[in-house]
Amino acid sequence: MAAAGNTPTELGTKKVSTLLRQYAVPGIIAMTASSLYNMVDSIYIGHIPDVGPYAISALAICSPLMNLGAALGTLVGVGASTILSILLGQNNYAVARKVLSNEVTLNVILGLLFTLVTLPFLNPILYFFGASANTLPFARDYIVIILLGNVFTHLYFGLNSMIRAAGNPRLSMNLTIFTVVSNAVLDPIFIYVLDMGIRGAAIATVLCQFTALAWTWKYFMKKDNFLHFPKGVFGLDWRVAKDSLAIGMGPFLMNSAACIVALFINQQLRKYGGDLSLGAYGIANRITFFFLMIVVGLNHGMQPIAGYNYGARKYSRVRQIYFLTASWATLVTVAGYIISEVFPGPASALFTNDPTLKDLAANCLKKMNVLFFIVGFQMVSTNFFQSLGMVGRSILLSLSRQLLFLVPLVWVLPRTFGVDGVWYSFPASDLLAATLTLILLIPLLRKFSALKDGEDTATTDNITDDITG
Image (cartoon, rainbow, N blue to C red; front, side, top):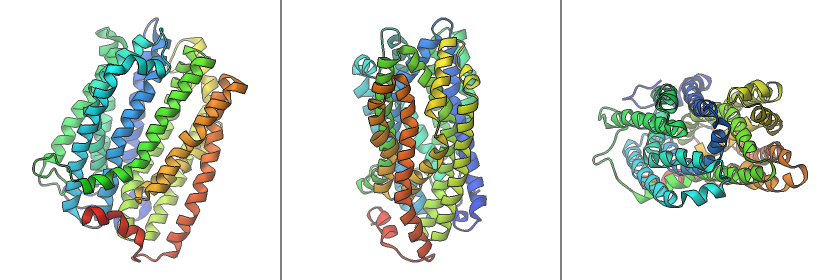
């Protein structure tokens, strides 16, 4: 691993499989820890005496709003880290620091705006997202705290991604592990000992992220790091911001699509299955999320390697990193498929003692993940396009699985199959999205096969022309 004060030149020289292990393992640990972060909250909340099932449903209701906040964070953070990797491949450190400064400023602006816009209209928003008289008090208690800490969350996740892109994935991993462990310790204290219920879980979450942000901020204040805050820290260069936001648009739309999907799912579940069906989906989604986060960790490992080598015009290494990451991701989603189809009951029982909710969650998990084994390759391909700055294709693939395919299916299938129609919408959209991915991916891989390392391409030049002047 590159030292904190050195440039990550190893990305263009070391064996690709070694690099992926080196960069992906911390990413996998970090993202697995991140998924455990959410699972720990759900497990503790699901076992609150007398109100656990409704509190779990409240978390599912809050999901669309939280996804929208995450979407704004990825709009800035993912685009900035992608450009950073390409700039480091070109040894352009001055502009890389400018990208870091822009990342901080844009996250503060968007984080504050999101909180100020949503808080005054919170009750109507939650009802629109599927809340009922039973679940609204729990949803409101949780999301108000999350929204008040939204700026800290944006900054932490954005700067953490910059640490990873700058060649220090281990620190990124350690910060994430810290938030998970501290959250696991604080959750029972705030929820049970202080008797704060679901509100206590939200306070623990924000407190842990704020503490991790303080450590992240300290890292970028060190002038001996090749990537550090420029003078003044806050700054906004619209040329840099434009390119950063353009590349981040793919994952932004993907997370925004997740918000729309969660909204439609919640509304359909409330219509066809009631409040506990929302809780069942929340449980199944947490379990699925665990495996998806491992794939995201692989993508985080792939991103700086692919971006650096693409910027350095080492196309054979770009192809190698894609195929290796896609293979590993497929193994992960195959494991998720096996858990979902063979052990849905025991997996669901982790989150609730309520027998009705447990059975509903097991049924949901088994049906929605019947084609889960193909999801890993599709996620890696989407991230691959984004890592190379190919915005249009990344956006299309980001939208396809969730918005273009899943939303219409969630709307139509329940009319025939009832609540099961919601669950079967997931494998149907997985199949359609994987087909579209292959159509877009195969020509690109053939192009890289035909190119010689070091050969100039218009595509590579256009990525950074605007930000380098």
